[in-house]
Picture 1 (cartoon, helix red, strand yellow):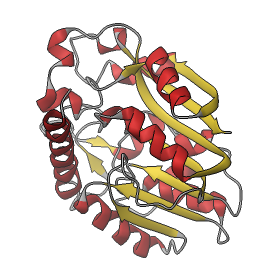
Picture 2: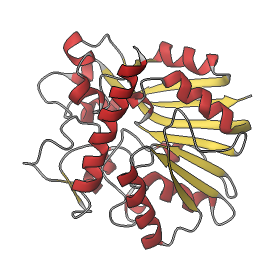
Picture 3: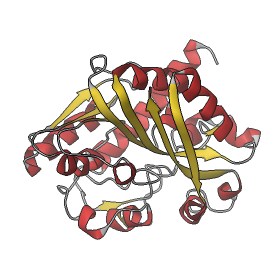
Picture 4: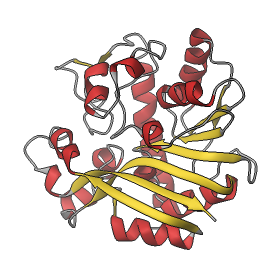
Length: 273
């Protein structure tokens, strides 16, 4: 994959999430479909409650009610801050922070002595997240514009990195993991939710840049591929655990083509030595 294609992928993904940010700004509690569906913007005939979508991804009712309206966009494929075991005073970076949903939940766990940095490459998403932070009074959350392959974060300044179904969107995943390793303190942790492939994707899915890459599908990697990337980036204690129950919502992303036979959500964890 050459650099031109890398840029095309980034521009396609940025445009997709720009549409999500702008389109849903006036309807903070109603979604069209899950973000990780390629129909997240295009489909507009079957409104779905964001809280219903996120409950299916593993968020509790208490968590869903703890964030400002407009922060939960129904995006993702899991609940990363629930697996991160965050502690008061820790510094957390969220890769692809969107409207700020996971950042605000992490903020409550690290407390006033901690800090959460949300990084997103879409200006409209960053603006929306900052507005949500003001609305909710989250003083320990900072949203920054940037690519997850080039984090606007200092070396060895972070305790934990979280992410929710975003790394698969990158055309250079190993660079994402190298950056994560760079900004983490020694002993720092990576705790992300993402989709992984369980079988080779058919060509018509793998090559669909327009819809399926930005829909968290055709950019997914296999568990062995991700394990290799993490190890080459320097991480140890690598654990990638598939969640078979995720097939229930994955099969709804594009009904009729049996995506659940190729993809599953997984909990991905690793440690910087």
